[in-house]
Length: 122
Image (tube, rainbow, N blue to C red; front, side, top):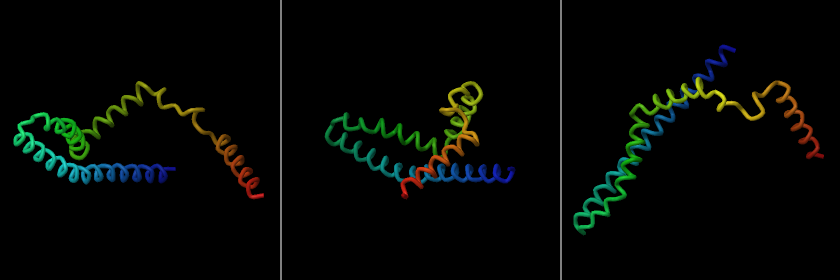
């Protein structure tokens, strides 16, 4: 049982590391896109004297800030803190429909599936 818990924890850590790595990689591409768009829109707004051309920079800047926080900031710590708060004070939100699976419910579903499979094979 202890080995299974350790293995599951290692898998969770690896998945989280992959998620952070993915965020950092995405940030490189989005950062390049954001830079090109910002420079292009700024130059276009100045040349054409139309400041509304810079409007898309605001939502793109929000997305860039979120990605930056996700990749290098404290977002993961804030999410973990919120998750811990939910687990302690709002535990009823975490209940599964029909409750926690039991050995009997799993066996019942397995038997139903195997009898359905054998019925379909005939």
